[in-house]
Length: 412
Image 1 (cartoon, rainbow, N blue to C red):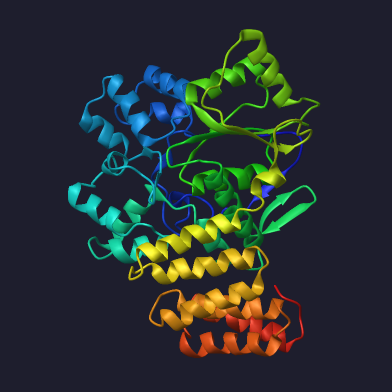
Image 2: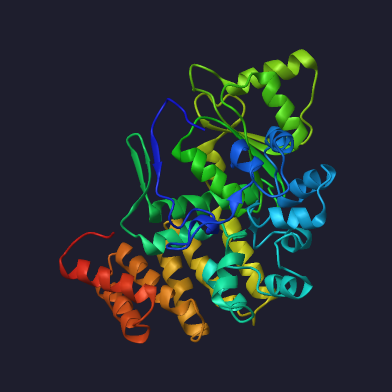
């Protein structure tokens, strides 16, 4: 969707779905919700009439809804499976149902068990490491095209610490800044009651907050319903009602239009009720009686910490316990509570010395020390990760920060 209000550039590395993030590998799987009608009609088992009907029914909120449509259209299971070799709707590794995963071509009950066993996936690297035990590199690359993990925004921050992720008019957001905003947005979505499979709609022009709101919903396991900015109130109400949207994000200052007021007027005129809609969040413009975007995203860090703390109490010996402790530190760090962040990162290093989060804990502890003005201790943490984990990404970042400290430059 293109809007005339501003030009937005999104550097997609680290944020795109995995099918589009395989550098040097051909993309063979296309999103069924974005493929053109002309290209769709060329695929096996499709006809021009069926392609036209499929496009008219979009967006499909999950691969299971697309599967139901194709089955109802009379395609055989063999035809549908062949079609999924060309188009698909990515499944969230951390929240997808068994039925959704089994629709990935080549995945049977045995591979399903492997997909489920390693949840939650903190990064796509975990998927690579675990599933690589059972398939060769070619098959792993094929399977990767069918899945996504919202945490990829965080991976982008690690890979491109100095790169710009979004340019929205005068607003420029780096990858680390985007990662922090996405975490904050995800926690807000969870606090708003969005659960895996729930729908949230966005009725607004392209903007940086549009992107952050969408990634937050996806991070909570929800699905995004996009509303055309040219819709009238009644048209928007119809889509919201049919899709069972729980949270609506909107702008009240686009082309001199107050979407919230337009929606309320339409509902009053028809006497309709959006029974599933729990909250309206205003990204920009007059808030009225709804929730401002700033209020929606604030104050969620205690919830974040309590969730990871509950995981630690429930699964103290889990292979992911060190990651849970690490993300407690991440929550404190994002909330600006640097002393608490130092303590949380130190617990990772002390309590889980063989955990995969030890190297990044050393690195992030160094950043937190520097925020506290304790430069010598920051240097010690950076040097520790370089010495103990020389081949890690954390060591690479620590070297950059040591060089920066030696040059007397401010934090990245």
